Length: 81
Image (spheres, rainbow, N blue to C red):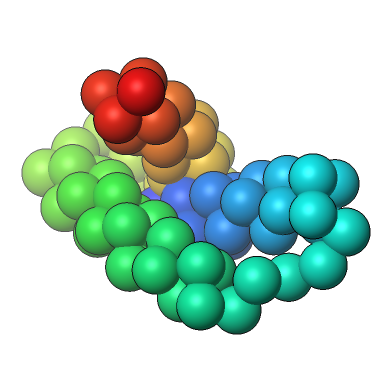
């Protein structure tokens, strides 16, 4: 659940940003970015698995995934800049 929430949040933010800046979807760039978004979401899912004892319910896992995915995306962009 955490990985899915992370993927949805990061993918939604990326697509919304692309539409605001380019007024269109650049499909090759979206495909390029989805690989990185998937890697961040996979890392969030692994971390959530390690914290499964604390994240007992689905809504906690989804909230953790959304927040951790967003933080991971920010860290990735900051590192690339």
